Length: 152
Ligand SMILES: [Fe+2]
Image (cartoon, rainbow, N blue to C red):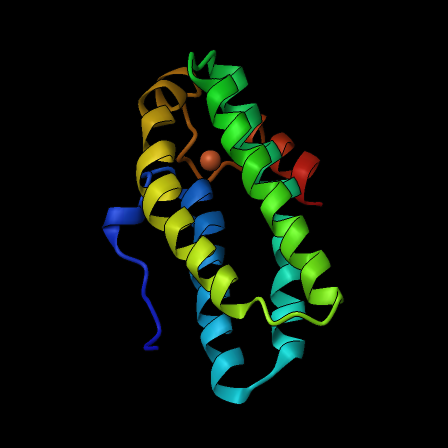
């Protein structure tokens, strides 16, 4: 498979979120490497990073939605939880010696198209309106505090 690239169709327009979403593209391309190199180690590495991603990125995104009073936050959180459970189950299957590359590759591609390009774009207007300066390169303030809370 050729590498995939980030395009504007995946962009929320919130810089800090888009940077985090680009990690999914990186993981998909790492899976392509894993297939080409026949390397289970790379798949294990992707899974470990995905487990971290499902904790830190989702918690960050959910706090933005809560902070903004986004009305569909609870449905969005359920989608995150379902993805988190899938990643954990793939990790278990991987640890049991199963080759989950194709399943994981498919899951991440669907996530990119359905969740990042669709579901996530739905909260953008509310979050942008309620968190002024969300796109500013702030050295102080709310955004910096949140980033430290979830990613330090
Ligand atoms: Fe999301």
